[in-house]
Structures are given as structure tokens and as C-alpha cells.
Length: 409
Ligand code: FAD
Image (cartoon, rainbow, N blue to C red):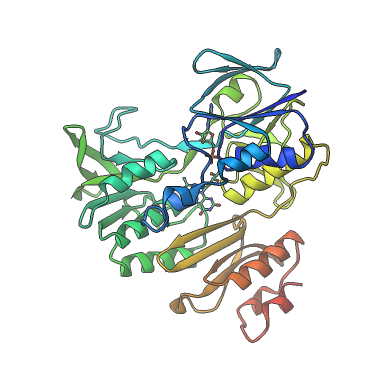
């Protein structure tokens, strides 16, 4: 029987294993991951889990019995070091070899390290945290006490979610964002301004346009950080949310990837017919947006994994899903569909002051994306419209007397 080896036991790897079996892959399946726990959900690590609202068991993607039922052999605590495509073998960190017939790379990413004066490359004081894994999240939670002075670097989703969760636990939170506004890379100015107001109202000392200059480390702890504007902030813990780097070193060495990721097609196939890839480690050309994208989201990891599983099982179904994402902060549920880059207009439907509104991003007559805050119905309608590449009358989107479904035809 043929052997499918999946490297990386996260959202993509877990789904790919089960999906390949469901689609008819008859051979062996090995799911190999360097973490020592069963595959779990990452999004709650900055949200409900960090806030103490769910326990670790509540995070598992599947119970162990689901892998047994699908005859998936789990190899936890095992790290793949190198790929030898010519002999179809992996070299693992313990020096052993693992032969494959088909290989799926689902290696995700790791946090971009903080680099500033006062910190040697790779230096990791005990109270400097990143957030990608359960182990990272446990490290943060152990130090997050009421009144703790938490300094968050980076106003992207992860940084903002950690700020909200830390405030909920009674910590004193300061957040530094280098750009003039939070969420600058992903959302329009209205949505950024809304989230800045919400965080400030919740007591976060939010400093945009503020660059970290250096950290003061003493006894393996960051004691204070100094901003470029001269402000010195004493801290109890620091969380850096600076985005991620794709884990593609082994794939690059094997000639399967460039720096930004492993290029895959809509069946998640790489340029090697025996190697597939899915999730945050990939780059996929989007016919919807006309460019190659690396999409860091759970829905994308699942869709790419299912496309790979369907192809491996002999029932190929391409992945052409509209990218989407969500973020929970305080009582706000943000859902985003599409990609707003390149929009020439952003139309608001509803009043941000009510904490329920949507921002529609439009280029000419084309809808590019939506950010829906506490408006799941708007999100669902817009997501469907994006899949059909429909045109919109931007001027009328703001008019709430016209039902949205009549505008997104
Ligand atoms: P991962 O889940 O990162 O899994 C990759 C796995 O591969 C890891 O377990 C890693 O240890 C393992 N691995 C890597 N290299 C090797 C190797 N050489 N050998 C063995 N194992 C290896 N997305 C959303 O859609 N909504 C959200 O609200 C959201 N919130 C998030 C909050 C946080 C704090 C974080 C960190 C991410 C969030 N994301 C969210 C992003 C989402 O978690 C990722 O898009 C998703 O986890 C990608 O899945 P993946 O399987 O590609 O990668």
C-alpha cells in the first residue's frame, strides 16, 4: 500500500489526513508534527482561551478516536528536517528516515522575531513572548495577572486580541503600533479608527505611529522598553505580535518553495507530482484577485487541505474559495471576506457608534471585500456575492432602507 506522509499537525495537516481518507485514499497515512499535543485550534489562544473561557480539551480539532477511525497514524513530537525528493524520503530531527509515496507539507509558520537594540539576535528573556502555539499561550497566561503591566508590540489582529483578553483579566495594557493606525495592512481607515476607539475606551494605552527603539533587559527579564519618541515604559511582560514567517526551509532546500511560501495550484499540488502543500506555508494564485496570495487563516488551511485530500483520494475538487477570516475582541465579532487591497472606495453601512456596521471595499463597480462588525448576515451575503464576482452600486450600499440582498445581485 502507498504511504501518505503529512508534515505538520495543525489545522491543515489534521484536515488533510481525514479528508484524504474520506475521499478514498486506501494506503497508510502518517501525520507527523513537532508539537507534543494532538492538533488544536490556534485562534482561541489569543481570545477565549487566553481570557480563561475555554480549557485545553476544548481546543482539540478532533478527539484521538477520530484519527483512529480514519486510520491515521499520529507521530507527535517529531520534527522533519529535510526532504529527499529523489528517493522520496524524509530525514527527521532524530536522524531517522521516513519513506513516502505522497508527501503533504502543512508546516504553517512561526512568529517573526522582535529585533531591536538591547536584544541580541535569538535572545528570549523570560517575559518576552510570541504567540503561535499552545506552549506560547501558556507562557503568557502564567504571567498575566491583574495589574500586570503588559506591553504589546504590533496592532494587528493577534496584538489587538491579546490586548482585549489581557484587559479582561485586569492587566494594564499598552500597545505600540509603528503605522499611523492599527490593522493598517488588512482593514480600511474607518475600521482601524473604530477599533482604536474601542480599545482606548476599554483602557488600553494605544500608541500608533510609535516605534520601539530598545528594550532594557536585566536578569533575563525585560524591565522597560524605550520608544523612538523617548518614552520609557516599565513592563512586567512583553508580547510581540509582528506577523509570521512561513516554515519553508526544508521545502526551499528541496527546490519546492520560495521565501514567501510553497507555490500550489487549486488542488494544492506543488511542482513535484508527489508533493502537496496546504495552509499558512503556501502561496496560491487566486483567479479572483489575479495574483499569488499567502492567506493566513483557518478557512484557507481547511479548504486547501480538502482540495489536497480530494485529489489524493481520486475525487478532485478544486479550491476556489473566497478568503475569509474573523476576529473577536471584547463583545465585537469581526468577520471579513475578500481582500481589500486596491479598493478605491470604502462604503459604511450602519453607524460604527452602534457597534454594528459593515465596511464594503469597492474598486469601480466591483466588490473586493467586506469587514462586518457584529453583522453576520451582511458577512454571509457579501461572501456569497464575492464568490460570484458580482458588481455593486457603491453609492447605494450605505442606504439601509434598501435590503443588502437587492444590492448584491
Ligand atoms: P499551523 O496551525 O501553524 O500548523 C503547522 C504545524 O506544523 C505546527 O504544529 C508546527 O509545529 C508543525 N511543524 C512545522 N514545521 C514542522 C516540521 N519541520 N516538522 C514537524 N512539524 C512541523 N485564523 C483565523 O482564520 N481566524 C482567527 O481568528 C485566527 N486567530 C489566530 C490567533 C492566533 C494567536 C494565531 C497564532 C493564529 C490565528 N489565526 C486565525 C491563523 C490560523 O491559526 C492559521 O491560519 C492556521 O493555524 C494555519 O494552519 P496550518 O495548519 O497551515 O499551520
